[in-house]
Length: 441
Image (cartoon, rainbow, N blue to C red; front, side, top):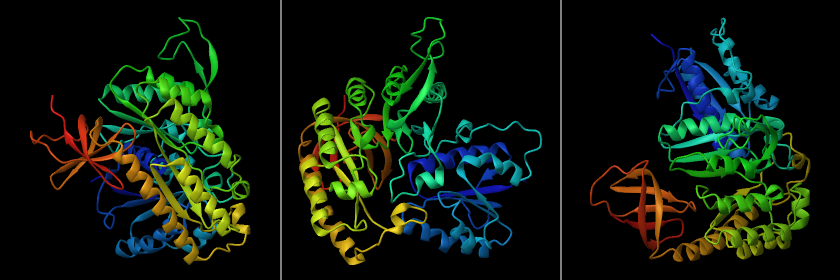
């Protein structure tokens, strides 16, 4: 009987993609998946250390898993796997602390290394995709920005990017299997750089000659866009300091590129941005918004904002509210600041109370709910292409090219629409989504 594994993934899309690679690697080692985490031979927890709440989750269920199944092997990977304080606290329950980049060490840990040839990078491991129509395709790993509040550079290391040929070959294979959505992901996708050999590229511009050229993310988008097939290109996530005019132009010109840009601003005050080490100003950020909207008038823009960063005064927070109103975001993901071990901000005084952080969160929520509803109302009566993702309680749900979430309120043919492109006419606008009627040919 094969041994079983169960993977618990906490955190971002990058963690989800890493878990997909881990799953396939384990199955190549002879393991099979199970939904029974309390009965599995091996449980892997892919952790997130960005917020305290995500960290606290493992302190609860890891001991519980070990108690329910004393013979289980528990592996902690992801952002918390290199934290010595977490290791000291959980060492009695954990059998292996595994950095994501060292994923292939699982073979040795499970006594499966023997003479098999292991890839020199975990990103070369083929994934076991969670979806049959939408695929996360990592283009790199790590971060060089060292924002003072963020653990990612410490947890994942410096930026390392995949060769363009590897990415293109993965996308071509996915499109050949009928995938409808390709999501290019990295900690900072628009920092991407790679050397590409034109003779191997899909555009074949070298005409048989080997021409090596360094390409950036804008050029990678164009190469992926040139792959034949009916699919969308999404990406996450971008850093404002690297959102170039060239990239905006490429997104506007590439017909497969979705017009949704997640552009984390984090704060609306220049002094706070400098203390966060974000390397741009409020003025620069708002100019980017204007450029994006000029090139793609239909674009939706979402962002992240941290409230209660050390030293953030009420006046400085008011700058975040002002920016949110001016940018007219389609969504704001709000994080209440919490100190993260190993970061520069941990040494700063966390001087904004929990109550004040909550009040600031509520104030920003009120702003973006208003702008989201106003933006959604502009879609009333219009028709959009939709990729259907889920179905529940008689309704199907999907997203538009601009990442608007739509509930399909009619399905006269009673078809299973999941994984299909359909056209819907918007009949109702809500705070966080739209209702649409299926348009039949």
